[in-house]
Image 1 (spheres, rainbow, N blue to C red):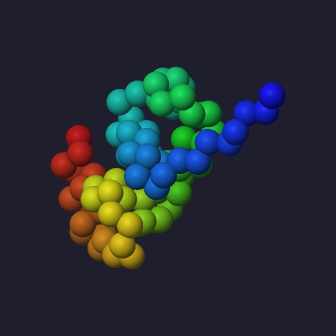
Image 2: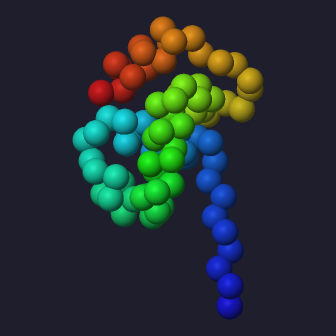
Length: 82
């Protein structure tokens, strides 16, 4: 019996990456809560930190259109999410 690979949506990855960036919970706590391996969360968090703006767009709108938010939009979102 083989286990099927889970495919996570961009909005799911973005939500977890934003939670990790907030720093209110440890990576281990987030991994346990969302049932995801800690290395995945670190990778998503680093991708968001490196400026992969599609994460922010999906986290805030859940939309799949190709709009890239400006740096001002990103900073505003980070400030209001706390």
